[in-house]
Length: 288
Image 1 (cartoon, one colour):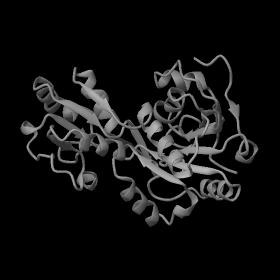
Image 2 (cartoon, one colour; image 1 turned 90 degrees about the horizontal axis):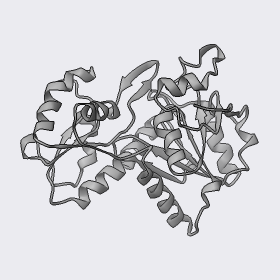
Image 3 (cartoon, rainbow, N blue to C red; image 1 turned 135 degrees about the vertical axis):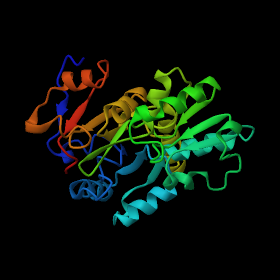
Image 4 (cartoon, rainbow, N blue to C red; image 1 turned 180 degrees about the horizontal axis):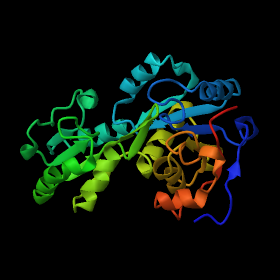
């Protein structure tokens, strides 16, 4: 529980010179799955003009190539960013490093490009050692409980579930949808073993920092990095795990919670079972 109020940032411009690199979430901050947020794009444009660096870090269970294509369809200018890292990138790296294992994919067909160039994937779950979960499948159902019988069967066979997207929910327009993180949470609750790739786990931040530093040829101090996101469990918790400052955006998945400017952060933390989390800063929406 917070013993203080996070600092409110009315205008992003006020804090823009305190940091050199911005680790920014995509879904809920830059877009809502249907369209870009104009004010957020204006912030990226201003940061670029001020010689600041932007690294987009997404829990999308897709390759960064696929996410770039998706952003282009939304008319996003890729010149505004310096690097894009996805949980799909981390997952694919893990699969390639474990050629001795056979993997099975649990997720929608739209995520199948994640396995491009990979040979140790089977369409028979019984042949697999581990299951790569990228999301819910229409044929099984859109309620988490629809997966109970299937999961219990896999747990009995000692199959580890690899969660390629730790997000539990996402806001698509005005509709909240379950993500792979919800399935992973349920699998663990039923007694199964789970590995997560993406925020809030440190590996994706190390991967992003290492690759950005490699690109620019110098080390960046953590105190000069700000994480921006709309999700306590992934973006803000991840920033705390990696020991960098964070800015919580309120008009993402919590927009209903913060209606009528209800800024009860203790209640928000408790409802998300994140009482020990520290929120450094918040902004109603990402706006310059």
